[in-house]
Structure formats: structure tokens, C-alpha cells
Image (cartoon, rainbow, N blue to C red):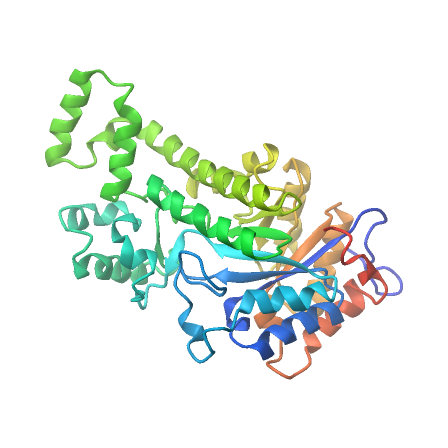
Length: 404
């Protein structure tokens, strides 16, 4: 795609453009970090910050079911990263979207130890992959070897598995996540709720006993007493008997449970803040997302369960980016804000990709992430400045508050 003659890619007329950036939890660890995020966002023509307030089952805010993040250990207990950021953003006309890693609750290198952490309180909710079924299903989830085995296996699969996940399948797990969203949207004046890692790591998950029991319960009312007794007999020696017998139903049931979770979280958030936007970071290819991650985001968008999808187009190849963007432009039914992997490309290419998204008719973009675009605390971001000159020139940022 060619640049305009003056080298500046301007948004199309009509409506406020989303110009967001993802801000990871490493920039929520002190008042100075928070202040710089807000200053840089305003200074460089952005309209919204998507700030990570739940990274690994921990909290970068006050209260709620999750434990205070260990990264905040050096700060006084009164320090409220999200509250600080919301307060500063309000005076600058910036939107704040609370970004939650929903199912990813631990890295593979170190399991959490805080007594309030979901992995400590409810190890039975941790997702188990099918290759570990024979090892973990006979073991109590309270056995220290249980979580350690999960972490070790996940570490060996680090090319495709990001860490240890909690399951969205048990009812209690959904209740706890809903309580987190209820707390956040009640306590904080948020513009958006942003759901990330709201997916399964792969189709091999989750065969934990809690998930298997929930699936059995979903079938119990449909099977005859004789059929149920027969399957229970098989499951006594073959715990995966129910999911193997009803393999297609097992796939669709897990996908539907994840969709039900999206519905619950969105309903709660909008009840507390009717103007709030619910968005999700999603796998770019909707068919792959649906079949491999059980993340039916095209349906979520079509049915209004989310207000916008944010496909993670994190590739270094500009040609690949443009091809995937065109697929989204041709097929997505609803608002899509493409996510640009700024950490893989230079600022000129980032600005060019913003221009491509505008030319395809998208109403905004998100940049991933502030970490890669910042030069550090107290230092000006030459990366964002370069992007602004070509993509977000001064004067256009006057629309920042219009999307509230």
C-alpha cells in the first residue's frame, strides 16, 4: 500500500477512531509507571489504554477474589494501580479498558503460592491435558505433585502452551470469574472490559476430574438409567469413557461452556456499567479459533456477546498481515479492531499497518504493547513519537473522549 503524498495516514471521516495500546502489568507497579503510561498515551495521540489488571490470577487493583500481585510487594498496601490509572486518564480524556487474562493463571516456571490464588484454593479447577490423564486423574489435586506435574509438562510445551490454565468448565470456576468482573466494574469507572486468554490451550484440554464430572452431569438427564449405569461402569476403570463415547458432544459442550462464560461476564459488566464495551483478544483466524481453541469469537461478535473483537495479528511479514486483514474485512460480522504486533516491527511499519487497517474500513487498531514501544521510565518514547507523526498526527486526538 502506498503512503499519502505527505506521508501521513489520516482516519476516515465520521465516528471516533479506536487508537488503543495494550499495557502489560509490568507498567502497573508504581505511581511513576502509571503516570508515564497516561502521559505517553495522551502525548502520542492514543484514545484508549487496555491495561492488564489480572495477569496470572493476581490483582493489580484493590479487593476482589484474587490475591494482590507479587510485583506490587514493594508498594504500600494502599497503592491501587488501576485506581491511580483511571483517575489520571479521566483528566486526559482517555478510555480505560481493564484487561483480564481469564483462563491463564500461572506461568510454567513457578506456580503461585498465595493462599488466595485460584490455583492454591482450587487446584481441582486447573486444566489437565489428555496426555497427563493417566498420571493425574488417580492423584488428588491437593497433592503437591499434581500442580508440579502440570507445570513441568507445560514448560516442555512452551512453544504452544503459555502456562497453566484454569478451567472455564466447572460452575464454581465461572462463579469466581464473574465475581471478579462484578468487583471491577462496580468499584472502578471503566470504559471497557477486555477478555484475553478466554480460550482453551488446545483441543486436548480439559480432562480434569472436575471437567469430566461437569460433562457427565450435562449428559445425565438425557441418558436412560441403564445407559448411565453402563458408562459409569466403564468410567470406573476408564475415566475418559464419557468423552470418548460422546466425542462430538464433548467438543461442542466445551465450546458452549466457554461462550456461556463470555455471556456471564459481559452481562455482569454491562449491568454494572451499561455504557461499558466488552471486547476480547482473539485468535485471528475465526475457524481455527473455533475448532482448535474452542473460541467461537465470530459468534460472540455476531450475537452481541462482545462489542468488538481484537484479533492478534502479531506477525513480522507485512504481506501476511494484509492477507489476514482482508480475510477479516471480508468475513467478520461486527466491530473488529486489529491488533498490531508493534514489538516485531519498526515504528514506520506500525504506522503503515495502521494505514492499511484504515483503508480496509476498520474503525480502529490496538498496538501490542507499550513495553516494546517505551524507552523506559522517565525516558521519552521515540517509537510512539514516530508512529504518531505518520498515524496519529496532532489535532486528530481531539476525538479521544468521543467513544465513551
